[in-house]
Length: 84
Image 1 (cartoon, rainbow, N blue to C red):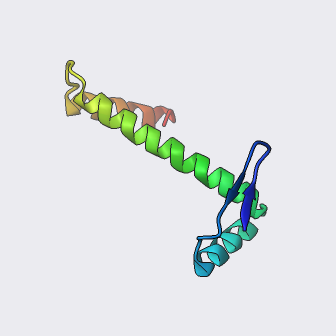
Image 2: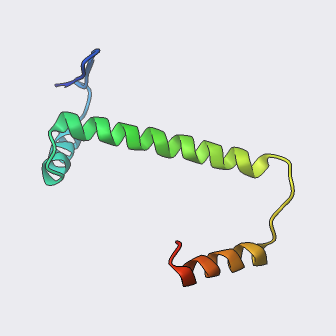
């Protein structure tokens, strides 16, 4: 079992057979090869992780807070105009 890329081969021999079968099934349902599905899933996971870290960092950065009523009004305005 391995993941082929242009630059290196990653061995996935330690993946339990049940998990391997589930991954293959998900790839098939998505109309992708297992290799395509794994790479896409890894990229999504990394992007989600980076977004979460950036969001956490933004919350702890010093600066002026935005009142909830202002945020709520902005979101309601966007919903009325179809901007969300």
